[in-house]
Image (cartoon, rainbow, N blue to C red; front, side):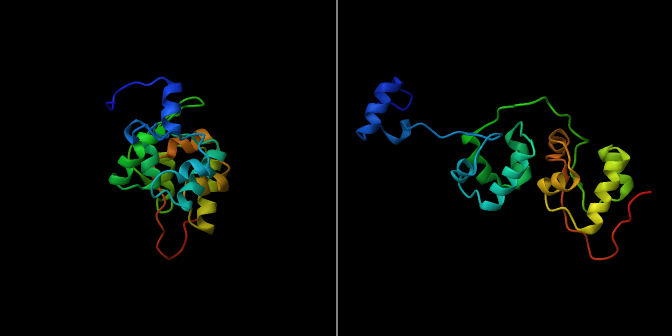
Length: 178
């Protein structure tokens, strides 16, 4: 049998049950990124519990990924690991498309109020809440931001790959804009 040879599903099942199907013809596993369970994510090499927790929290908040690069940016995956994950990922969209912000990562824990207003173009109350929550403690990740600000999924989706969450240096926190 050659690698590209087709087999009907019944023949494939019979050969597999008798251990006669070569590994190269075994079906690959696929993960629907926007509906994946914790067990699905665990099938990927080096996908740790911290990553899984973040992805599931974002999923519960309604956040979806439209392509692999967004996922890899969010998880800060190295190139070699990204290339190992890519063949297993399927991106099905389950809602309306989101719009992207100005390119370039914005550090939500370090940017001043004027930069945040300009880059995010959020309503004043939302920006005030971001500054207030950030003064209490830095945001850890997108899921933390979404939960603390009660952001809709569509807003969080626009932030993927466009924001970072660096740690602020010690010192006085930025006061909320009045």
